[in-house]
Amino acid sequence: MGSKYWKIHLEISNICNLQCSFCPEVVRAKKLVDVGQFAHAIEQVAPLTKTVTLHLMGDPLVHPKLGELVEICARAGLQIFLVTNGVLLREKEAELLLHPAFRQICFSLHSFPDNFPEKDPSVYLDRIFRFTEMAFEKRPTLFINYRLWNLAQPRGQRSSNLEILERIEKHFGVTLPREVDVRERKNHIVKNYLSLHFDTEFVWPAMDLPVLGEQGVCYGLKSHFGVLVDGTVVPCCLDKEGAIPLGNLHDTPLRDILAGPRAQALLAGFRRGELVEPLCQRCQYIERFETPLAAQSI
Image (cartoon, rainbow, N blue to C red; front, side):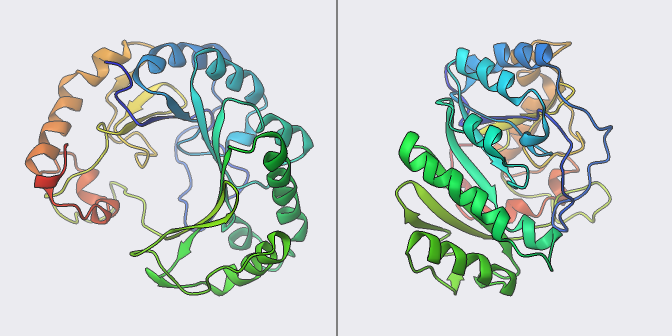
């Protein structure tokens, strides 16, 4: 199969230290991945991709054995794409995130004002800035992404972002856009391999939401898929509750799960432009895929 998938989401914890308004609460039982089970998952994932994330839900910095998990990825030759709100970032975590296995670190800066609207972000941002400066020196090609994925409309800016933007400008000596249109451009280079990324909020798909349509395409199972903390394989990173369980890689080999009837029916539906799974029919995110079906290699 080779590196068939752009990245695979391995959820190491479905526990988060925050509860953002734009991120629904996890209904599943709270769990941290066992190191042995993670190693078993990596054995099956490594032949299929070059890049893994360490989340689907939850914040990776919550896991007390994150360092051991990173070493397992490194021994398998995998690059890591990590997303965190950054609130738990301290000296120990900062040193770990400079490990050569990491390809990109994303900080969801919009999480802080959402959870602490009246709190001064200075200490929070200073820790992230300090890590960024360390990366400039020790890991100069490490991609660092500051995310502001909280825009209400494709064009405009949230007032809660302004203080964050001003502090980034002051620290790095740059000028950043106040008005952005994410339909035209989402990513803005700040300095070196550091970028600022804007996007709009979206509604997570859920089975209790109304059906939006039965036609559409998705990159789920084409460019990526997810593995929940208990080993359940799901077709995309938005299936946070395992509404489309394709199998469990601790019970069934991953290759057999991906070649199984449910996964293949879902892919065949995408090729026809049909959403065969009820969760997909309730997913707002597919509206972001504007490329015509005929032009896609689904």
